[in-house]
Length: 83
Image (tube, rainbow, N blue to C red; front, side, top):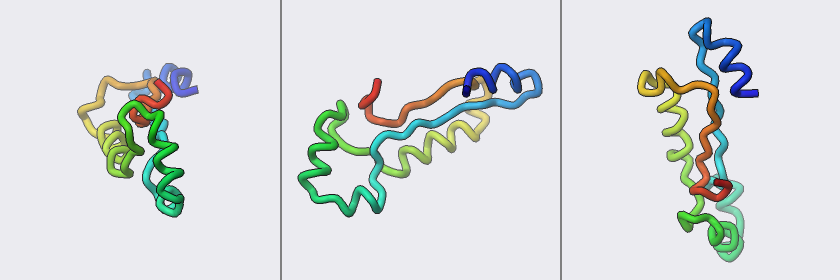
């Protein structure tokens, strides 16, 4: 859907992208017992869950001129968990 919308709207100068966050430290994750968080983190290649700021930084990048030629993509922010 992201790529289709990017193709459709690109000629109008509209960029379409998506962000796919992995497990991120939230209030819900903070409420989990430490051993559960360890089990969730263990298979992630970077060895930890993400921080909200790390996900937010991707949105900031996409909203900035630094990404002016980026469109039709889904950016995973998951420490390579699903890569």
